[in-house]
Length: 305
Image 1 (cartoon, one colour):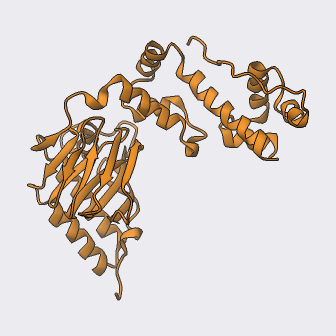
Image 2 (spheres, rainbow, N blue to C red):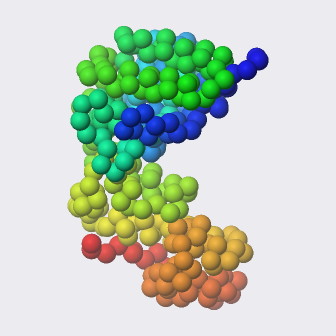
């Protein structure tokens, strides 16, 4: 290949009118022997288009077959899982992106790109036959990438694909039974996935609320009603468990453990640790090799909000 842009180079930020689109990934997808992908959520949008073979995907309900010329879209925060079929391995393309307003007050009236792409958060989860020329547009994206010298022009083609999807008001296809992905069980599972994500050591519960498309107050009230505990307390419990494991297995400094486990400042970590376990992290570590030293009891750190 002479000049051109490879698919894994199609990332970056592009502004179109009142929207800022972060292109995360354009991936030529093949399972490569994998049999499944367990339930998970993520903070970006994802669109999967199948060209050959087949796979199964689900959104909290029964798995749906996805075959050639079909696609599915996963809004940010929606739980989903996949199964791959060795007897009919699929080949397709996966697009991943996020969208934000160009200005704090952007995203309003007619012609708003941000408003159009934000509506994809309400996309009806399911598997859809491509009646919109989506597959052709994706192939054109790859063709343009191979021939283009300008990354910006290819990124704009990517945005045109997103707007094509956003223009579909009432897609026709096989959908997940109404409300399955919004069940209380799925709601709690999404929260656990986010809170236990080791990459999210600095997670803010208000960002979690944004990812689940609910207000923080609604998230806090519903979580307390379903579990009897607070979501802030649950996050603290997860962070403490991570810190205990690091204290046992590593000789990392208290400051480093505080940072990695999500507490940030060492003095804050030490205070929370001592409030729950009765000893400081430093004292606890010293006592690990003393036979008489008992392991701290598992104490609930939940409290009313």
